[in-house]
Amino acid sequence: MPNDPLNAFVPHGLAEVAGTADGPLAGLRFAVKDLFDVAGLPTGAGNPDWLRTHDIPQHTAPAVQRLLDTGANLAGKTLTDELAWSLAGENAHYGTPENPEAPDRIPGGSSSGSASAVAGGAVDFAIGTDTGGSIRLPASYCGLYGIRPTHGAVPLEGSVPLAPSFDTVGWFARDAALLHRVGVVLLPPAPAVPLRRLLVAEDAFAVAGEEVRAALAPARDRLQERFGSATAVTLAPEGLERWRQVFQTLQAAEAWAAHGAWIGSVKPTFGPGVRDRFAAAATLDPALTHAAAETRESIRRRMDDLLGADGLIALPSAPGIAPLRGLSGAAVDAERGRALAILCPAGLAGLPQISIPAARLNGCPLGLSLIGPRGSDSALLAIAEDLFA
Image (cartoon, rainbow, N blue to C red; front, side):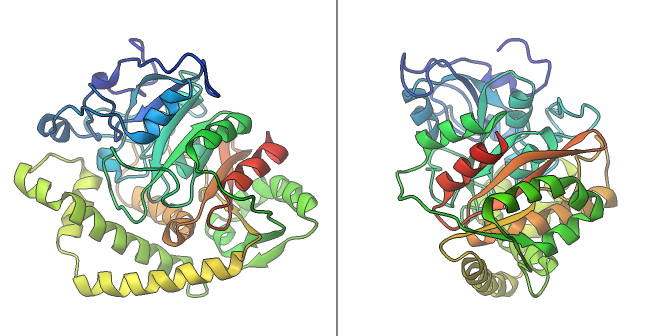
């Protein structure tokens, strides 16, 4: 991949790795976020100091190896926000991958390069990670299908962590059928999960606002026709803003536990947003973390009770279309907060969520998401393929 007009790939990851000659993914090209190890290639995690201070891996991450073993060909490694701790897709060191569906707007992060490479046609599908929304948000911004699977469903070994109790391996594709094909390879065998009840997360739609609600109405109607009816629900009785705070507290505590020692030793140079988040994480009150962990358990129970064994929750994938490139300060923080309020329920509960490119607003893509019960990943992929392919 010597030519990279999208700025989707990292310079140290421009090496192709051939998959096996046959298999269910034979002949397809994929890219992998530069958090995953590929034997013989550096893992940079979006930061030059990380790249400089870590040895070249000798083994390929199991999730990546599984794709190679089923016939897919690796086209290279893609740009990520620093240590995956951003939703914007703007990297202070390596730049911003293009959003091919809205070139004057950000692609979303942290799986920015993977989303850009798929949306721009450089590869057929791409692997990323999703901790707080790093698959679901870029999928919405770039007009892609993307899935965050059930926590723990796809192995994370051989990847750089951010917050392990939230981190997942996800993937993007331009069509639902291919997203499903990749899922057959990556997801473990599981019994069928019939989803029969459609729930609409009214509090999530309220965060997004009326323009988003109206744009996504036809997709909601299609779902309602399929399920026969829809029940309006409130996910967070205490407010999604409170859930967002719980998520961000736990994410910060885990991120510092994962990287604090390295930061103290190396003193890496971070871009403004990531630098500020790590600085705050370093001084986090353990009592806050403990309280947040207890609240998380109640959130998990709340989501499980709503879904039961056969429920499906519809909600926006994002609070709106992709913001313009180059914004800073309060505008960025406000949009990040609104996005996390919508994105945090599945992460807090460890549930699978799929983003479907369901609409356009002001000429830009907008995603509708579906959250299912734990282990219903294949059912979500099938619904997306049946209704929205």
